[in-house]
Length: 238
Image (cartoon, rainbow, N blue to C red; front, side, top):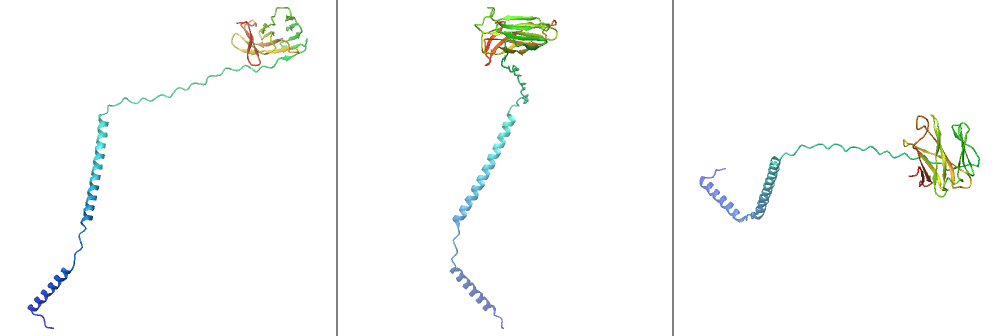
C-alpha cells in the first residue's frame, strides 16, 4: 500500500472535520432543567435555615436556664417532715354483763345466795337469813315503800371476805336490770327475784369483795333499768 502524501492527508482531515461539523449542527441539545435546579436550591436553603434557627433557639434556651439557675437565690435547706404521731385506739368502755331476766320463785321458796345466806319472798315482802340463821324482813305493804313510782332500796352486810347486798325494787313491772357501782367505780349486776303473776315489786341481791378493812361496804350506788336500758330509778336518789 502506497502511503498518502501530506497534501492528501490534510485534504482528508479537512473533509472529516467538515463532516463532523455538519453532523453537530444537525443535533439539537436538550433544554437545561433550570426550574428543577432552582427548586432544589431553594429546598436546600430552607433546610439549612430551619436547622440553623433550631440550633440557635436551643442554644438560647439552654443559656437562659443556666442564667436563671445561677441568679436564683439559694433557698433554705429542706426540712424532713416528721411522721404524724399515731394515736393509740381509744379503749371503749366495758359493757355491763348481760342481765338475766328476773327469776320467778314461789312464795316462801328459799334461795341460797352464798355465804350460808338465804333469801325468800312472801306476799308481804322480802325475807332473808344471815349465815348464823338470824332472819330479817322488809315489808312492801306497811306504807314505808312508795309503790306509786319506781324505786329501789339497799341493805348490806359482810365480813373480811365479801359483802352481801340486797334490797327491794318496786313501783314498776318493767324492771330488767339492777347495777351496783362501788366507791372505786366497779360495777356488779345483781340477780333479780320475783313472785309469779308479774307483780310491781321484787328482790335483788349481789355479792362483792369487801370495800373496807372491816369488811363493810360504803359509797355504793344503785341503778334500776328496764329491758331497753332506760334508767327507772337510782339509790341514793340524785
